[in-house]
Structure formats: C-alpha cells, structure tokens
Image (cartoon, rainbow, N blue to C red; front, side, top):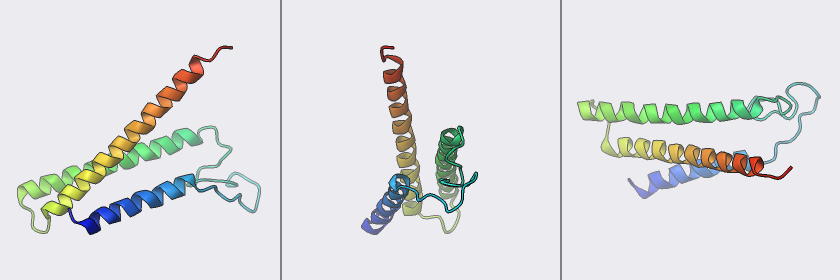
Amino acid sequence: MSQMEINQVLAQIRALSSQATRPQAPAAGIGPGAGAVSGVPASDPGAFATLMKRGIEQVNATQQNAAQLTSAFQQGVPGVELPQVMLEMQKASVSFRAATEVRNRLVSVYQEIMNMPI
C-alpha cells in the first residue's frame, strides 16, 4: 500500500471524525427537522438507535465490498489489482474495529450506570 493511499484513508477518517464532533448549528425554523443530524431529528428518542443502525450498515457494506473485491481478485477478473483489494480489506478492518470499540465503550458506560448507587 502506498503512502498516498494511506494518507487518503487517514484524511477520510479525520473528515468523518470532524463531522461527528462538530457541533451542529440549530436550524432556522422550529419543527421536526430543527437541529437534525444526518436527517435524524434531535428530539427523536430513537435518534441514537438510528445513528447506530446506520453505522453498522456502513461497516457491513464496507466488509461486503472487500469480500467482493477479494473474490474478484481470486477469480482473476481484469482490472482488480492487489493494492486495491488490500486497501478495501484494511478499510473493512478499521471500520469493524471502530464499531467494536464503540460497542465496548457503550457496554462500559451501561455497566457504570447500572452500578451507580441510588
């Protein structure tokens, strides 16, 4: 994998990270779309679940894409190169590890809340 490809992946990760941590400006009007993040209203009680579902779907899509490229490379499909396959496999691996880390932190926070004295 070349340095340029690594830098592109890191740039994508940084862009997604900055989008996730950037405070959202409130919408001009008041209504179901006010303060929405990624099309999910802030007042929606299922917003977190929807956000998590989208994240898992993106991880799944990345893994499926890597599997398809791997299969195409193994079958000798023209135009599918080893560096491309390796890059997609690394993207899938990084996205899965990130999702696993989010899950681990959620479980940890849940356990802390459950162990709080009342």
